Length: 96
Image (cartoon, rainbow, N blue to C red; front, side, top):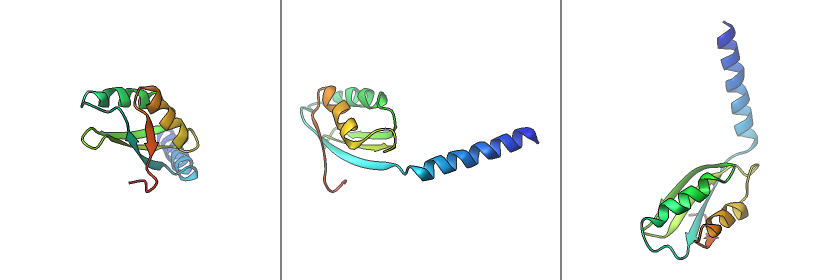
């Protein structure tokens, strides 16, 4: 019973926390992106950004779609991390 109650409270807390800060998804165009292996450098850079919850690098279009928690990081912070890894990043205005 006690474990069930703790689980229920933890679930409610997680739901409230995610509702308070909806995730944001932004597509970034990347410069200097010349090979499929560059993908791993970008992914590693994003792994170190607090609040990034998902990333999908597309080597064919030289883009990365990043989902993040705006309460923990920003579009600018994500772009800076990608740029610092050697691939200057610019957010698409349309987001897609």
